[in-house]
Length: 256
Length: 276
Image 1: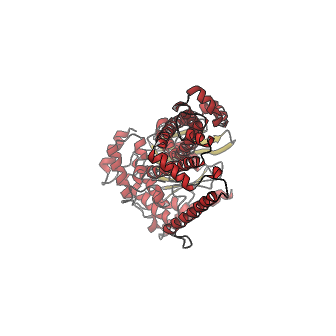
Image 2: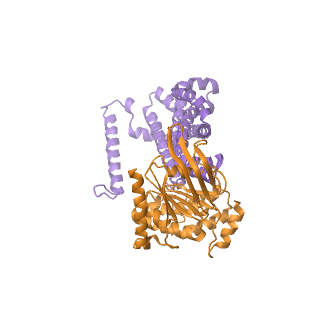
Image 3: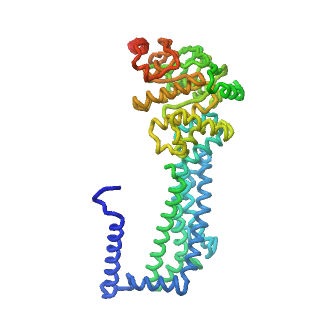
């Protein structure tokens, strides 16, 4: 956009940093002067100190980070592969969809976090239970976007394919699948964020390792700086995931 | 018609004087009724199209022109059509390699480049990679898109997109081309240009063309014969031979008196049909 009323990106970044600096300085001051009890809001300097200590000195958070990320990745990959496969099955076989769709809708309506205790009983406190929760979220998101993408094929393409004498598998490979890819990609991006949500949620319930588990221990002992530190870390991970998916999408879907 | 023979014929005739390719279309008392909609789209339609002939059907919207074309392309639900229809001597079958079909909208695949789209038809029909690529490149050049081979459809104008669709259609070996208002969505200038592109492509190979349009000037300027249909249920009101020389330039025709006489003749027939 070349609107003269919009600043250049340098100015915008500078303004952004100023807003953040003002916010953190005010926070620090409010906590320091006991305007608000630091037990409730922590302290920016305390948060930085905590992160420095746990990430670079003892490196204890790195271990948790790997567990959480590993769980997220496994949940994401399993959930999206299953979601795409079942979605494609629904697109190509409407009777299968007719049978299964209401059942899946009911399953998807369950608050997934409520299943976490059950998954912990089934799969224990290791990777299994968090992967199960993440999977249960990712699967349905990717499934519904795959079905939507598969349905969204241009009817002109189908007419053209039929007059060309395309087989069912050619129609699927050359028309239905490629036209579904952008919509599936939206589902994948959401699915990854929800895989992270499921994993962290399951860890907060009960887990041997992971950022969620550490978060709940810190909160239980009123270590507010640590809680904020981990929340900050998680939001950075979320931003990283989203922008990574976007750049991958732009690279793969240059034709859009 | 066997494809191998047809291909060799095209190869030998490229550049030299073109022989008429096989590809007759015979409608004999064809009626089309859609049971579900309780609608008779066409009744007792008879028309003989000789191999290599360029025939246009014009008529008011809803007269069943597109229905006839879809019948020939094998796109109608079975049982909808009655009477005899022979496409290249055979009853119509969906996906028959005797037929290349072109839609009103370009139907380009946005995820494929111009080249990828131009070879989509031949790819589906199993033409080997090198052959179909060579043919697609040749046709893209002939439709005036040299240099745009790697452009995606989003970067092309509507006229350019329809040029790619022409290249895709002409890449196919089919002796019969069925065209459903292929230039209907274009502005007047672009339309004239593309009509000339279509004529120059057709002139080389003289394949049979059945062309549906509601644009009289388009029908008169391109065709050997113009069939005028009445409103629903569609019948033939007139079969007007277009006695203009070949090869033609649509743009040059705009200034030719005989073209305007023929146009007036077709127009008065169409008017008769509308007032009935």
